[in-house]
Length: 181
Image (cartoon, rainbow, N blue to C red; front, side):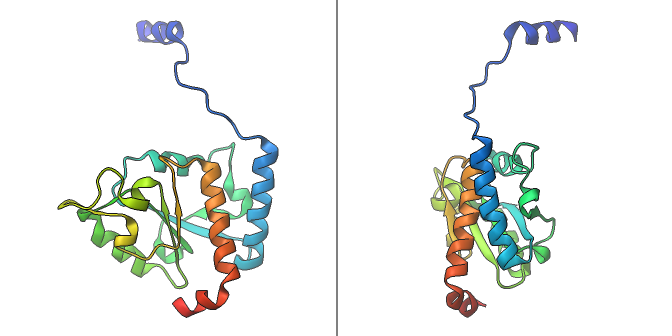
């Protein structure tokens, strides 16, 4: 154990440095998101994250939204364990054939109005996997998608901007929003 600890100290940090967003940029974006959530969702937006077959890169970025730096709960965004409590489904990865039924059941279990966001390049177009005997490809091939957040993986800032874009899009087209119900 001591040998591993000394090796770690000798090697040091070898990962590349991440450009951290300025606190003021994050705060500004968070305040805009919070205002939309307060106005249209009574102060709370519930998200259910679904891994439909991803490599977990997108999940790591989504989980970063809950870390002490981003702390999106202060803006009124909450991740929930059940689709029955969700307003938004955040779907990652190309949809594998094994996850197709689970994704459809989750979509059906989510109360109306429900919004779906495809997160990452694989969810957007199937990525390298595409459509095959084992993969349905993009999320839109299985369930209706309202917004796509591209990236491999998208950063937490891009995820927040995508959520804001979804809220602006849906709140500006309320007639369409109620027709879908």
